[in-house]
Image 1 (cartoon, rainbow, N blue to C red):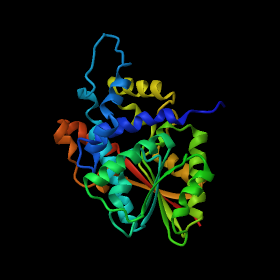
Image 2 (image 1 turned 60 degrees about the vertical axis):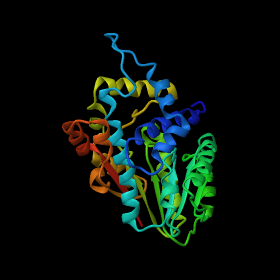
Image 3 (image 1 turned 180 degrees about the vertical axis):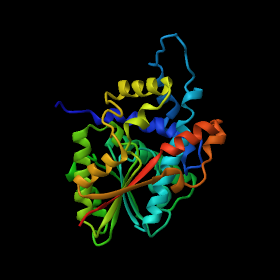
Image 4 (image 1 turned 30 degrees about the vertical axis):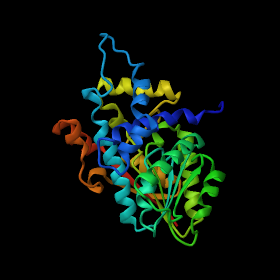
Length: 299
């Protein structure tokens, strides 16, 4: 297989940032403005084409649902980190979430955000602005480190700032939909290995999806996904699972016992639905579908 340019996926981090601004996620509005998230959306959606010639606004009715989806996803990850009681976190492909900046306000938490060097360079410039704007102290417990989640040696290097005598929580949000089956296996093996170097730990992710979840969407969402694929040269949701049971079996085969819960049950109250006027029936539909997974290494 030819080398893949994972940096092309980076524009999707700006898409996520655009929709997060409609929530109360810490720094979400600042991030969206600073990185030009709206321009990223425009770049992707300009390629959309409908057979009837219909043109859509970048915040079309059908795509408003991404605001609560992404708010729910972010908050459920935070909720499960807190529930785990683990205070060392390694985030893979962190994008512009700045979850680490927010959580590291607690001096007892050590948070490592990893992503590709291009994103990290932009994020470091943003952090300088935010730290000055909000007078955020540097306790030495928040780290931005360049690492590809599929490169074990880079992940090992990224964790050298953490204490191996304590457990670690590894989280990723939005990465897996872009991975092939082989890449996902590589990711799972890397995560299992990293946890084995610490005093236990857990893998938390809302990224696992089933075929039924990804297929039950509007034409506009399908077109939007196709546009993202065209921009990134990566097929999104190309390798989904048949069922939740098949996800459990996959994780079991890679040394994990796993279970899932509802994202909305783990998330704090959602702000974005009222801000973007998502219909209650549409919101209830996605709430039933959105799951978050916790995977614990087997002994």
